[in-house]
Image (cartoon, rainbow over all chains, first blue to last red; front, side):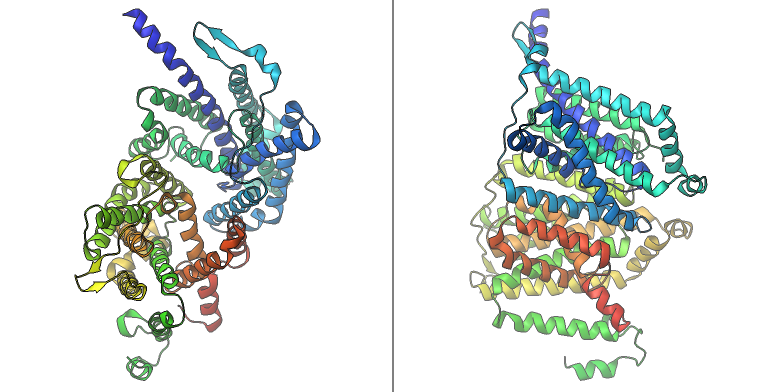
Length: 295
Length: 328
């Protein structure tokens, strides 16, 4: 009896780990969305496209300039983040006085442009980004169960990044400015803090976070122009479930839903794509403001 | 109806409602549109025009929500696509005639809109957009896996059938007249809805929801009914499209389709009566002429999106109306 349960568990474990890896990306992406939304009141629809850009920049750095994984992990977020700052400065900043929906529409347009450009350049099929060999050291193996070290790394890095971001926002001076400006932008500006610049930098940071997630994703998923769009809609559901209220909420919900998806895959694989949306429906029925949201 | 009799019947004041709730300029614009619908198939390819009218109806249905209830749905492809699938399946596998298959598509769209709308109206603004998008993605995964939709291939070679056992729709022009009839019917229905007491309450909710509640209106019921009507009309548009092109595929339920209908309404002018029709014409024509450029269509659509949001928020019809100082 116990043996069969153990056997079941051993079968389930890879799926659970896969779920955790997916959850790591949900957490990173919804964290970026929550930071941007908190400060700018804009839902960044191009978040998925910027995630995809991160993965592509990593690929280009490797294949065109010979810069490897570790370089890409630093450079790609910086480059894509700078690109985000340009978008904010030239376009998004003109919309703050308008209905928030215009921000959504604008960033949707940006997502289409970015995806279209990459489709033209690289086609729709996927490119391969090899896992750096040094992660072999992290490989875990017990019995028949084998866990690639890179996945362990992704989950760990995502956790550390989320925790770090949370600490910056909750415990540092910059974070306190950020929180104050989210609550009362006019008042903070009256104290002599440059709120428009903070908004620009916040958008840049959120975008950089998406690109960072993209670099992490490059060796796991095939690098293709549609990879961000596939993710971002699920992440929107995650955001609705968690509520936009708290940073920690976004992270916890992200990991949790990845895990739920992984477990669902074991028992009923057809439903694994839709389970997040079903949970969203249930949450909307019981707690419309989201699990961590304020009404 | 000649232009002359119409003008004579209307009151001299420009903004006063004339025939069927149209003001004088709206009436003129409507007659121009009807004239174009009647004359254009003799000059342009009827299948292209039929496509424009299907999408025009789809965009008008979408506009009913955003323009009059202030709800931006980012998941209208779900109702359009399921309408296409059901009409296609009914016509192909059950051999049902178009006069049954198309309304069936509309019914399924509305039936889908009921639970989705019920959930989505719990939140407003950006959340509403995200929820509708997520629901539509669920429908997409359903369409991908369900046996009757044909997965990646979709439902192909759907027969157009014979309308009322009399009109053989395999002739493109006959098909066009059916589409034109459905479009004009849908257009007038939406116009009638907007100008009914129900439509007035919807506008009141859009302008000031708390006040509408305090006046005793059950705001959720109004929003939900608007959502269901919009979804049903989107289903009819999808079903009609499936018959015109003989196919219903995953393209019809994908999120890009939801974005496309938003774009059409935005280009034409959100909340204008004729905007979605013009927008659908512009976008479909653009897709037609740019088809050989492949993925650049996506880029150009994105650029139009950005340009509209940044500089052109009233849309084509909104700008014209602003120029002429009339509401179109």
